[in-house]
Image (cartoon, rainbow, N blue to C red; front, side, top):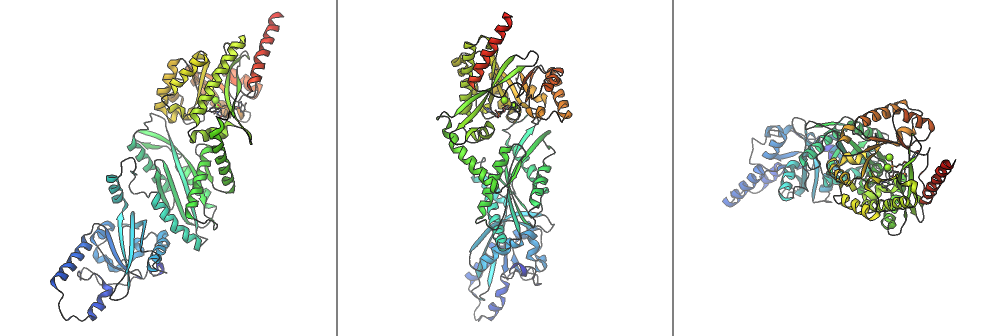
Length: 613
Ligand code: C2E
Ligand code: MG
Ligand code: MG
């Protein structure tokens, strides 16, 4: 094996003493040639030209024997790696190679020497004399000396930073990775291919691919358009990721906020969850950048190599599938690919295909959940909640399909359908039931709709068409989507505010934001996330949070609605804290249109019988 011989580098005389000898191996043959005449002048000139071309080439170049001895290196090599020519006789090639990369080098060299490849390229780390690693693009070829019939290897190593700079000249700025020095998708795939072959030959050498992206939440102003800040942030994140890994692992930036990591050479499958946990922990502390504290959360999908993998790209694909699964589960989740993930991914793919036709096939319907005034138990509002009546799978929860609709760009049309239908129903109830006059309708709005500049116009049109008063419509936006798109949200929400529509922050308390952040937005109310109440029996801590939210909301003049109210004790406790509105199974589940009609009629009958008594 070539790598076994890497350490066998025989001491040689300093080439500085004999600058004219390029190919040491051919020395003896040259001597044995009949030297009847001195070479013609042109040949000497050509030789000198070639020697200079080698010496002064801007790319690091080395010539090696088939057994790994470095025969010659040029000036660019010495400058880049910090060596002197006099170091060459004692320098072993393996000293330049990162220990984990030795097998990859071996694999590549064997392919060259056996003629399976004529040129081999890969992005690899090489070690500087000072010990630090440099990312380089490595191109190697082999040739056979006609004189001695011995094989040589010609290595050219180029700093990736140079390549990236060259790319920047020819590729529009939006397409290149500003993070010079980090491998990209192509380099990752090259390394993965080699590592894959090694694991195939030696199955104990474990291999895993991680696919991850980060989302940012800063407490102060977010300027999504600041490309430099985004790149600096990505750079800091990549450094944090690297610090949680071993030096042999590869972090590659795929695009924008997406990274992939190749973990090589670990021996125990159980290490993978630990590595993922370590990566997540790295992001617990905010990233300080340009006097801001940026909160980061990572979603990670991972695929662990097993002998039945047939192609390396399947590992990356499965890591990506697991990543999407993790993303659907919510912020900061991670998922390791397994057969269940596969089944789930196929199911979601099916949902995605069917979802595209669901709107035109009239498969959606709306349920409405009462929002109750806790002081007098009166019906105050109704929250519209979408359901999908799938022809084969039955009723599907919005928790399953809203995120898919967001991903595939269907959420705006579905959201508009919900808005139109909700306003139409409310108008019918207002017309048909006297006692419904003050009841409002709450409609959920996706974060994706909040970046659509046409959204306020569309809302205005729906209000005109339906004939309901703007103050009868409450739009619910989730805390995280508003914070994530703060600038655009601020602008769109203030236009909606001017229309007279009421705005509410949904699922409050689950994001990273503070009330002061919410105060920047022109919102009128907060909905405390249902998770605080669903657990309250066990958790006094949650009540403390509710209390804090109540105090702050009151000081900001915001109305509060408690979601997920399930018991009468909760109602009493909420009232003591000053919370006047509640929604939850204690009062009613989400109800069909017919049930709401029935409810209004019943309420009417009750109040009539009370007045007649
Ligand atoms: P949400 O807006 O926070 O809606 C409240 C959810 O809490 C509803 O789930 C409701 O059924 C559930 N819930 C209400 N009371 C209780 C309770 O006492 N205990 C418990 N455990 N749960 C309760 P649902 O209908 O499954 O909706 C889930 C989420 O889907 C909604 O959360 C909302 O974020 C989203 N969603 C629903 N309809 C739409 C829509 O038309 N557009 C958009 N963008 N999202 C929607
Ligand atoms: Mg809601
Ligand atoms: Mg909610």
